[in-house]
Length: 299
Image (cartoon, rainbow, N blue to C red):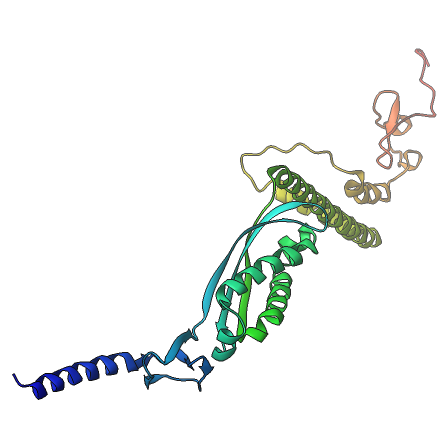
């Protein structure tokens, strides 16, 4: 092999190595921040890019949304209740150059900011707000973190509080409070129902009092309902209001007085038929004594 062939082979190898070190492929969700001799170059990517080996330094920046889990934080709420709270932060890089130039590691910095902000925001809220109005706290957290990460080219998408752990004694106290609240609501609902029922009964009684016949119809309807079951035996008194009309009719029927009964024959002077020592009046069903004295023997 001649000297020229050796030189050409070496140059070919160097060319392959140079191309291997110069060619970079950036994916669609990646951007390249390049520095040449320490100075910032224009943003690169996506696709095939060329850099100068040993002169350029390329930093790949991922533009996808990153999920960051905040470890549990020991916090004390506004009403002095200790709790353990953890959360999740979703963020992404919107300015690749700032994310490289402004902060050493934007993911770690965002995690630290999220932890301190979580303790601060939860410490300003009471336990009821932390449990019942978590959406408001999430929005407050997202805004607070976004203000601090914006200069780094990081945009906070979502912040969600995942779990809230409180002492067992506090959990039991909350359970008792919730049970007492449910009992109070049940009593209030029952009282309103009784009040409404009493009002309806008062109106019904007022309506029935204006029409006495309605009371009798209602009574008969109740008896019909009680007798619907063939196996039931119902014993009830008959109210005087039902039989009073019949008694009134019987009392007003014209009768012939005993003194005006026609007398004829030998038995004209005989006494009218009677029950014992008195007569019976249909009007009031009370036996009355006859006004005629009993006869003595021999007269």
